[in-house]
Amino acid sequence: MKAIAKRRSRMSRQSSGRRVEITARDLEIFRLLARYRYLRSHFIHGFIGGDRTRLLDRLGRLYHDGRYIGRPPQQWQLPNCRHTPVIYELDKRGAEALTEHGEDTTWARPAGQGQLLHSLMACEIVAAIELAARDHALLRFVPLQEILSHPRMSPAARARARRDTVPIHGLNNAAVVPDAVFGLEYRVGAEKTYRFFALEADRDTMPLTRRKSAGSNHIEKLRRYRTIIEQGIHRTQLGLPNLFVLTVTSTQPHLERMTEAAGRAIGPSRYFLFMAMPHLGTDGEGLKMNRLLYAPWVRVGAEALCLQKT
Image (tube, rainbow, N blue to C red; front, side, top):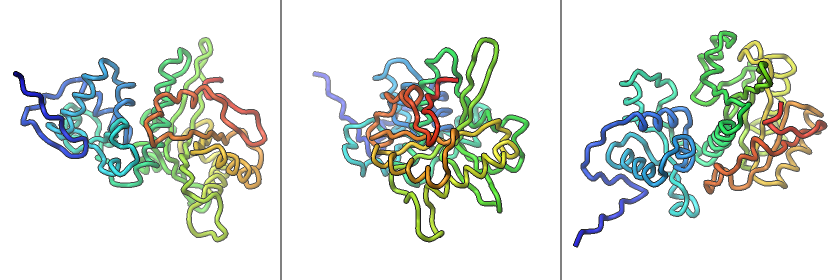
């Protein structure tokens, strides 16, 4: 009778001793994790495609036997962690494999042990929009790396860039650091137009305002964005013709508090968009959330906007 193989732990590496030969498909996975700090396995499948069971097995081999990708240990402290898709990040050997194949590994440094849920939420928002745009015949997702390669990007801004964002310096060198920067290309006949976005992922952990100036708060960040947009700093630093600020928060009540406070602080604006997405970044439901592209985003003093519309 054939022995049943013991299932390996999700939470720690248990090598079988088998050698892992890197394939072209593995390199696709490494590139994806080089660009996104964190991705759950079902997002990786959304990008890579193919048989889901075989992909999950391969991810396990790359984690346990190859040590090419990692599973951030913070995820095992999350509720229901044994029953949700595993979160992956690129590990050192995965970055080295990209380098050996002539890939730019600027974005391939292993992720640190920062705020997992916040970073994951930002990654899943952008990944969900990118995946939804792939299914839209007249849209193309524009990643930060493409934005950075444009000659209009200032060298100073390019030097400050990170794997998924670029700090923007406003008046008196007051910087704002988006959680992500990306764009969408719209094709209408032979014409192409663009929108570019700075993302703020909010899990209702940052105060909307503070009585004292010390410490971060969301409304102060929006004020800085307003200055950047009004002064055209997004053009001079990033070379972008426009900049929309997307704020995704975790609950509808907090969204209502946020838009009310934003209306008082920055007034009506077509450039600030808000949406509530419960559970995004916590339970693996982000892949189903194509409503980020198709549902209306709230604007203060302006008509709601669906991102897929020009």
